[in-house]
Structure formats: C-alpha cells, structure tokens
Length: 167
Length: 245
Image (tube, rainbow over all chains, first blue to last red; front, side, top):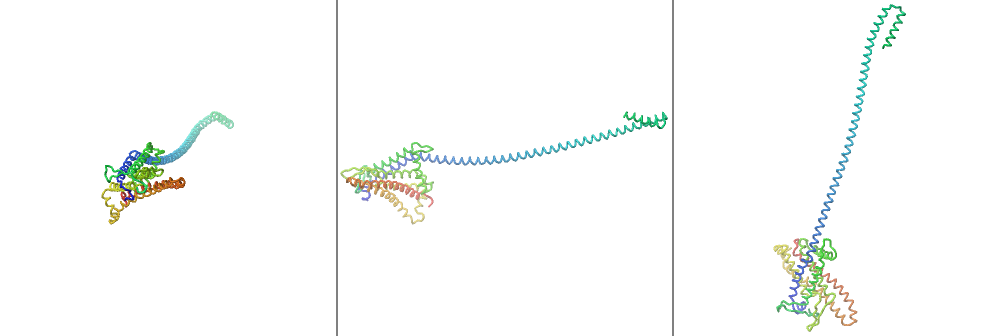
C-alpha cells in the first residue's frame, strides 16, 4: 500500500472526486446533455413522423391513381357504349324510316291503282251507258229516216263521229 | 507518490482518515470544470437542424449510444448515456491534462506536482472504478428489482456465488489499475524525458524528439484508455442490468 498510495491514504480525494463526478453528471444532464438529447429525440420523432406521413401520402396517391385509372376505364367503356347505342339507334331509326317510306309508297301505289281501277270501272260503265244511249239514238235515227244501206252506213259514221267528238 | 512526487496532504478537521491531497483536489476540480464548461458552451444553441458544436456533441452522444448498444439492450441502456458521456470526457480530459505541461513546486519536503494527470493517481482511478461498480449495483437493484438482482448472484449455477463476489472486487481493481497504470507510466516517462532534457543543451536536443513522440503516444493512450474505461463501465453495467443471461 505504501508503494502504491504513497505515505498517506488520501481517502478525502476519493470522496471529493465521486461527489464532484456526480455533481458534474447532474449539471451536464441539466444544462448540456439533457437539452441536446431531448432535441435528438424530438428530431428522431419528427423524422419518423415525416417518413410515416410521406408513406401515407404515397399510399393515398397510389390509391387515387388507381381510382382515377378505374374511372377513366369506366368512362371509356361508357363512352364506347354510348357511341354504340347511338349508332344502333340511328341505324334502327334509319331502317324504320326506310320501312315507313316504303310502306307509304306501297300504300300510295296501291291507292293509285285502286283509283285507276275505279276510274276505269266508272269510265267503262259510263261508256256502256253511252253506248246503249247511242245505240238507241242510232237505231231511232235509222228507223226515222229509213234510208238505204249506203246512207245508213254514212249516217252511222256521222253519228259515231258526233258521239266521238262528244266523248 | 513515492520517488517522483511529494503529496501536499492536509487533514480535514484533523481527522486521521479524512486526508486530502490538495494537488489531486485541484486537478479533479480543473478536469470537472473543463468538462462542464466545454459541454456547456457546446450546447448553448440547440436547434432542430444542428450545426457546428451541436453536431460534434450529437456525434459524441451517438458514439456513447453505440458503445452502450453494443453492451446491452437499449431498454436498459437509455439510462446510461449521461453517465457514459461524463465518464469518457472526464477520463479523457484527465488523461490529457498531463500531456502538454506539468507544474511542479520545489519545497523542503520534495517536489510537489500541482498540474498533472489526475488519473495518474491510483486513489482517483480506483475510487472512480469503485463508483462505477457501486453504480452498477444501484442500477441493478433499481432496474431489475431486489429479487432478480439477488438471484443473479446464483446464476447460471449456485456455486458461482463466491466468484461473483470476487468478480466485483476484481473488476473494481482491474478497471482502476488499468487506467492508473497506463497514465502513470505515461507521466513517469514524460517526467524522465523532461528531466533528461533539462540536464544539458545536448540532452535537451536529444530528448526533444522522443518527448514529442511520447506525447503523441500519450495522447493516443489517453484517448484509448478513456474509451476502454467507458466501454468496460457499460459492460459491467450490462452484467448487472441485463435480463437475458
């Protein structure tokens, strides 16, 4: 012990050093290390927060992108459907119009034919009536005049001519 | 201290066992003050975006955190950051104190060295080591509870109990003596080289280069011993507070 510690065992130094060391630890914690460590922890939390919020934002963005993509896909499909529908409708309409026109035309043609036939019937019946009247007239004239065949023929022709002009 | 120094011893209140070596008291106070003021002025402007001194301080804290993390879980380790920083800086400053110069006073009783490395005194290194070991016991009790703390003396097998007791004392002694031995050797050789250099001009020229080399080596030793002291503190601490062994 003499060789190591010298003439005296200075126990007071030990006490002084330990107390001093403890006081230094307390002072450093209070005035130097504490605030710095607090700030380091705060920064750590801040960074962690930033990272997690960035991660969240990224996920949100991805979600929105996906949604947008879906919406665009949806819109495209809808547009295609609308165009398709429109075309189909217009085609159908055209067909209908065409059919209608054809029907109308047929109807008119039929009506015209019917009218023509009617007119013809009328004309024929009128002609018949005329012919009968004419025959009677001719006959009466023939009887009236009692002419020879030649004159008779001439008379018929005249009468027919008259009638023809009348007709 | 034996052949080289005479200690300026005083007795407080005239009590026999309460002796103070005034040189030690002086150097301890100087070291503590230097550590405090350096850190105090380094941490004056603390900002979210660190710059200058704050960067250096945070680097130091991170360094200590890494030492702690290599020894134990962060759950227990978070209590020891301030202890680690204080130990490494106090020991480092103490080791460095004796490197650039030493002040000595010639008296009738002999040479009183007022300025030297306080860690070149076994009383101071051993008391620092004892404080560390006592702290490990304190935190062992505090963090694990008395029951687990007591059981640890009988783990992994009960007959290791005496060795566990011996371990505490041997740890104290090796921790203190390692630091003391290194720094004292540095001091002694330094004093010898300086003494040699002052004998004559020729020796002064001849001893200059070895002295510079020894100062560089002393700086290296001082830094290394501060690191080792801090690391071993954390290792001993982890033996007492870790739950996984």
